[in-house]
Image (cartoon, rainbow, N blue to C red; front, side, top):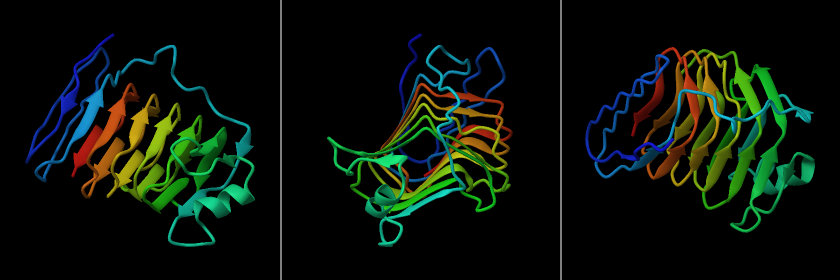
Length: 211
């Protein structure tokens, strides 16, 4: 099923789409020249929806490129479930990891990772912290990330949070039953692509753009 691509530019734009089950996609763009591409985000689970991951169970993942003890290279050396080198042809990959009910408030938090290529794939993560800026995965000041075929559902906060992050792709993820938003973008998180995700029954908004 093909759907139109929405380009959000300038000041305030609200788009509401209603599919066969109740879902509202509301978009707020507060700064000029911000661009977010939203394409083929369907309410119905398709054949290609991500399966529950399960080869590794961890407490939480924190990656901070400004901290030598927590940067990508150190984490890759320490953990078997991280591979790659951070380049376009050989990105870092985190896959087949399950993180549930973390007390840190962030099952996955990647920050200050500009210019490092990475993929988050087939990961299941949820948190019991009830705050909209917290959730299954948080990207803070991050670019070149690719989040594909993950399950960020049943969070007390949001499913995916982008804060001051750009040039990232969110594709084919399950973002259901979160107590705030399925996806939240804030603080100049522009030039991101959101495509073919399953976003249903989130308590506040399916996709919230406050950029």
